[in-house]
Image 1: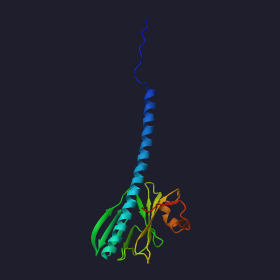
Image 2 (image 1 turned 90 degrees about the vertical axis):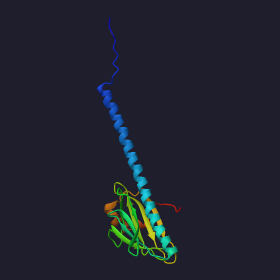
Image 3 (image 1 turned 30 degrees about the vertical axis):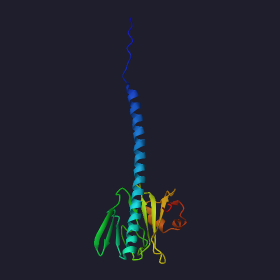
Image 4 (image 1 turned 60 degrees about the horizontal axis):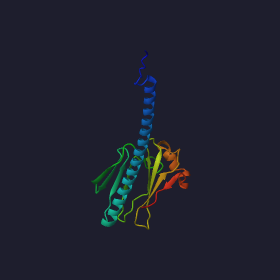
Length: 189
């Protein structure tokens, strides 16, 4: 009499294949979550910078007071002072990098003052870089003598591949930056 015993356990090969599938799905999900977190970080910090500048230029206009906005990308903070007294400190994400090309050099520390008319003392551009140092956002701060309002143009990377943290100075001062190719302007709200 022969007895058929069914093997109800997994073989070694089945176990390896199952683990490989689980690891593959896990790595795909990890990459997807990292990309989503990067997009959220970029959006949050872009909005934080914009609203900080708009808030203090508006306060300057209505209160007829000047504020100094100290941008410190070594510590990733914006410090707002009035008469050398700190008023507010805005902390930016340490996972992102930021750069202000100004006067043909990098400016990890940059000061700009608001005017009594609700504008800024100088025009400049802030580039925001993603987790892999690829440029993702561009905030262009324009000052107009006739207008009493600060103008911030926001651009999102739309296919610009070869611009990163290391070559941002060359890009910013090249003719490529003028044609705005590879950038999508964010619509004003």
